[in-house]
Image (cartoon, rainbow, N blue to C red; front, side, top):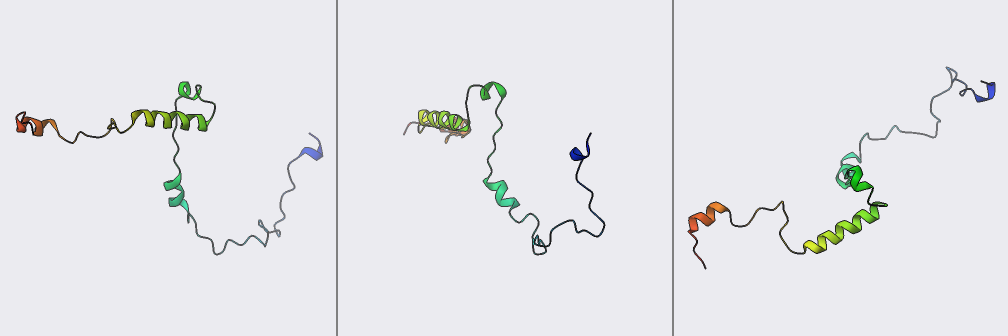
Length: 95
């Protein structure tokens, strides 16, 4: 390996590690950490699904189409408004 391709010269003991214009004395560690976590929305998709879409815009378009197709139907994760127990207690009464 030639001298030209070697790593940078090591810092002298008397040289500071940071430039004087970099002043972090008033910095707060993790100031925006919680805000970042609340706003980030990362979803990991399986490789077989990933292969069907060019980019994130294509995934978003497909999901929006699916949401429109679902319309106002109740989602799979929502519970019915009337449970089986309530229906059984009602004894099949109709309003």
